[in-house]
Image 1 (cartoon, rainbow, N blue to C red):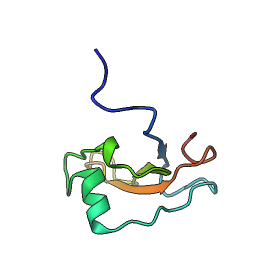
Image 2 (cartoon, rainbow, N blue to C red):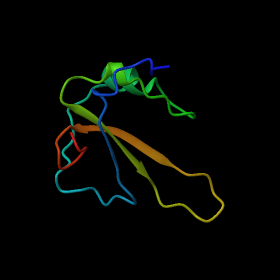
Image 3 (cartoon, helix red, strand yellow):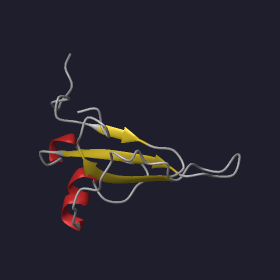
Image 4 (cartoon, one colour):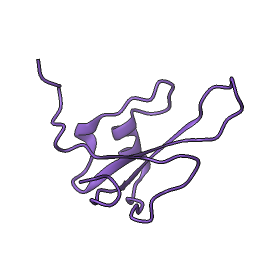
Length: 87
């Protein structure tokens, strides 16, 4: 059974505590694009890979949080490059 989207198009970068790789650069976004990719506000975080424009990747950044507290997760778009997203 295959996935309902083309995984060859999806690229992601996960950073921790704001230590973003130097190779990662933001992708210009607007409200409509962010809602299309992430489906609005979570939780839960919903990602729609088919809504990613060509050349864009997803960056997930879990924020530092106190022990036992819920994890805060920032999500955004970056330019998909081998040094940032691996693609």
